Length: 357
Ligand code: IPM
Ligand code: MG
Image (cartoon, rainbow, N blue to C red; front, side):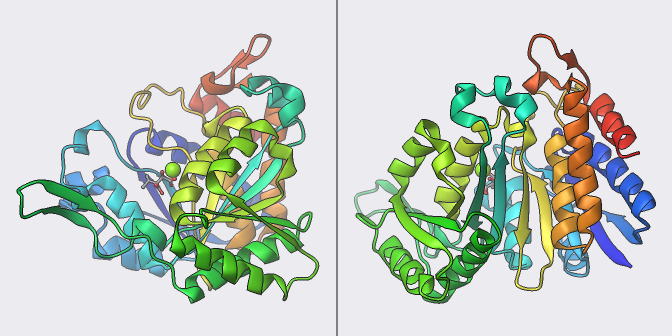
């Protein structure tokens, strides 16, 4: 039996997770999978109930699960709280607490959505990029950090970008192995011309490449990478980068596919345990209206089945079902275009369940 902890979170989180949960039930039934589900609070929902965004109990239950399925965290209501207790800290606490250092963010363009991209169809047709983002180090977690008052009374904010060789090496290995299973091309993104920390990053990636002769490694500065992603995204197969650069580049890559509402993610530790979430946020502006796109969360369930629940066949079934509903012309508002049928969050979820068979 496999255990999954479900943390819907805030904003549109509960709406999209409810649909993904139905898909998980159905696929488990069809493929004879024995999955025990447990539910918990994260982010603002946890703050409202317990005063903190992630309780020790939730973290313990996450540690005891094979996988965590998460919706999204954050919202206007909690924005005035101190940064140390904001909803986002719950997410960062889970990532750190489970040592989920490897974040896989695929950016795949479904051919049915070529028209939904803001880029010309010929630029994005056939797009299939995997961004491997380091998730538990770098400037997000580096010490010292804070806001201090200088002798002259002026305040100064400071954060630290820090990576040890072993941290770079372990994310590098995940990226090289990912590239081996794909087209064998890995682009490491850094700012080695300015930041010593990423000079070391480049050096370690280069050293590692000797162990993966079947992978072609290239390096790119992050500013250029952002530009190339928009100019000619199909040049990329796998990209590997730091926590903050990966945060930025994955949002950028997501829009190539038509909507940030389509992209799932997996965050893995060394034991194959993982947390699965859509890369979009809690979208408080549309929360409660039943119009959010549940497909990124549904596709996150597919990643969960593949990477943590040892059920690749079920994962493929979900991916095929998603493709089928797109073929049927069903679209939530974010990917809607003339000639397609606009559906709600729940209608989209039901259509995927039906398409599973
Ligand atoms: C993401 C998000 C998070 C991040 C936020 C919500 C803390 O933007 O998963 O990309 O910055 O990592
Ligand atoms: Mg982000």
